[in-house]
Image (cartoon, rainbow, N blue to C red; front, side, top):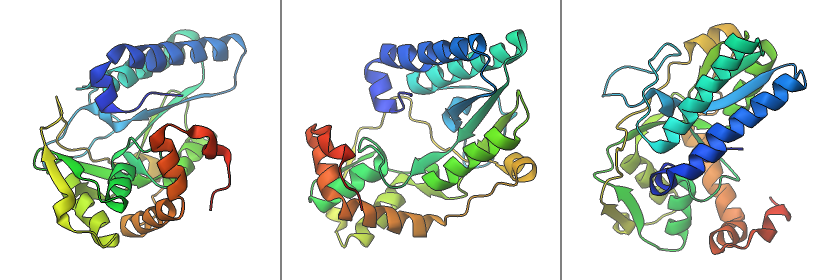
Length: 252
């Protein structure tokens, strides 16, 4: 589907080029050749770059990626646009803020924090932890994708956000509090190369044209997510140990 972890893109950009750019191009060619009715590209707000303390990303914000990951997604988006403009393929691009929820692969921030906290392992926080992210529950994101697929106008871009901005440090503190763990587990580490300061989404276009708004309140969604990982800690431990066979077994 896509490579989506910024840290790994810094370590090896070529994998992200092959999967996110080459993979998208293959899908576009297949869709065009087989007269697929509609092609929807799930992109990311990271293609817009970084915000200061004010303002929001809109669909008209300039594309300005700062990491190999976001550069690969931006490149893919441009190929999608080109197939709409050049070949008349019915395409739509969606861009969302940070996802969270059950089943998320444990390379992402929230599962990492939950896993480390449950096992009393130090939780790495980049720099001072003051980078800001807007979080959207996976169910809200999926609903947005569906509405864009069904109602979206060909060639258009639609943003989805969770209206839930929080610093990385405060997010970690929330999780620790929910798990009854102390702040002593936090370990500030050297900041990520090219670390974007803030992401925030203006989703008014999606609200107006797709009748879409996020439904899951962040605090409620985060508590449900923590509870899910606690109930499925065997799956989490198995994934972290590299044993993926449990992935297809029973989930709660």
